[in-house]
Image 1 (cartoon, rainbow, N blue to C red):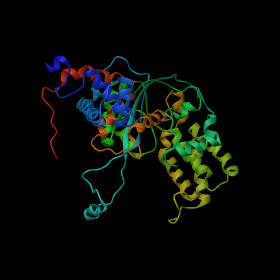
Image 2: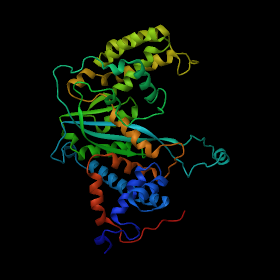
Image 3: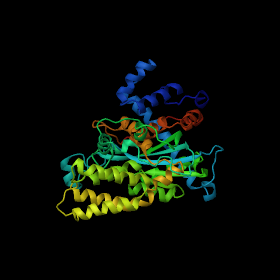
Image 4: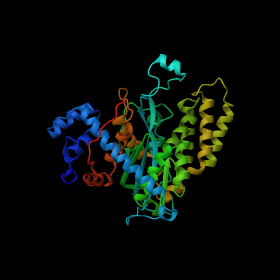
Length: 414
C-alpha cells in the first residue's frame, strides 16, 4: 500500500512536498532560510531540523545511486566503456574539474586544545576541499586557420589582469565578489569559441579517486566516449591530471589559459614597475596565446637568470621565487598549451564553466559560519543535481515511489 500510494511510511510529506523540501534545503543559503522560503513560496511551514534531516535523506539516496552507476561503469568491458549508450553523441565533449572550499568539523577528532595536546595531533583548521567536475556537450566549427590569432583585449588590459590575478586560486586567494558568469564570456565573444549545449555536474567530498570514477561514469552515460572531438580542461594541479591519465587519456589535455596567463603576468611584473613590466607581459601573453611555448619559456628563463636563483630566505612573493615558479610551471605544462591548435579544432581553452559552477555550489556550502560533517556529501550531490541541465534528477524522482522502504527507518544511538 505504501509504495502504491507513493508515500514513505515514516515521511511526513507527500512526494511533491518532499521534493520541494529537498530543493529548499539544498538551494537556500541555510536550513533556517529554507524554512522561510518554503513558508513564503509554498505556504507550508517546516522546521529547519526536519528540512535538514529529509534533505540529507534524499541526498544520501542520490549519492548511493551515483555510486552504483560509477561501479556499474567500472565493471563494463573496455569496448563497452568506449561505446555510447545513447544515440545522441555530442559534437564536442568537454570535461572540466576543480576544487571548492568547505568547512568540515571532524566529530571523531580532538575537540579541544587539551584533547588535541593529549592525542599528539595538530589542528589543521576546518577548511577542506570539495571536488567538482562538469561534463559539457558543445558545438563548434573546425578551422584550417586559427580563428582568433590575436589575444583578446581582456587579457592585455591592466585592470582586468589585476582582477584576474586576485580571483585565480593560488595568487591572491578568493575574490570578495564572485560572479556566476564564466570569466571569458564576461569579456565578450571571440571568433571560434565553442557553444555549450548541456552541462551536468558531479560534486563530492570523498576524494579525487571517487570524483574521477563518478565523472567518467557520467561522461559515458552522456555518450562522450563516442564523440570525435574531446577535451579535458583544467588548471595545473597534479591531482587533476592524474584523473586525466586514469580515465580520460583519450581526451585532448588542455591547460586552462586563464591560469597560465596569470602565471605569466606575475612573472612579467615581478620586481618591475608597470612601465617596465607591462610591454614585456603583452609580448609574453601573445606568445602564450599562440602556443609559442619555446619563445615564452626562453624569455622567462632569461628573466630568471637575470634575477638569479631563489634563495632560502626569499619569501614566496619575492621576484626570484615568482619567476622561478612560473618557469617551472610553463615547462611542466608546455604539452598542454597548444592554444592555436585547440582553437582550430574548435575546442575550449579555459575552465571558466567549472569556475562558475563551483561558485554556485559554494554559495550553499561555503561560509565562515557553516560547518559540515555527515551532511556534506548528500548536500553536495543535491547541489550538483540542481545545477545539472540533464534529466537524471527528474528520473530519480520518477523512480523513487517504486523504491520506497516498506518499514520505518530508525537511527541507532551513538
